[in-house]
Image (cartoon, rainbow, N blue to C red):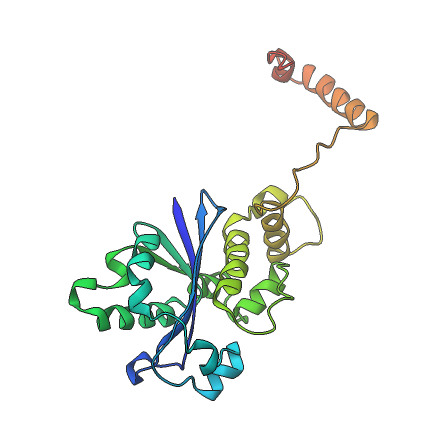
Length: 240
């Protein structure tokens, strides 16, 4: 499956009040691995950035003055996300803004849902971790994702961080590690999720010790005498 991790920065909080997208950042995943393809633009919103929003992302009106408008990049954006699954944290916010931008271009442009599906990682996190903080920063801490570069919000940087978080959230298999005593379920999920992240080193091969091999052989001998047919393990073909 082709997936696009997406984030936006805006002039304010409400597209219904005329607020606009000023940055859009997308990162492509194929088979749960980053492909290296991105879509990233700063955009001229034709209105002032609110002071409160500027404190969040640090993008100034002066910086945006010579940037393209959404209309200039809309076709490239649609082609980039077409037939993919969008991964967005708090998807209603970003999708609402993108739909507002598409509506300004005319009815023929449709809506985000006409081009691709959407997965909301905030809703997913709330289901997985009810009653806990599920902001992107909180999830980074929970899943041991490095977000030290995130002094301010930025669409492409946040997409890169969200990709790591999403892969950690959806890649853990706690059942494989339930024999570890003293760990709660959340710790197990977090540890096993880190193990399957796409940027990890290859898993080490751990060989059995002489003591473990001896204990295994003794156990097989007990099985040999426990039943009429003996130990079935010994009857398996040698894989080597």
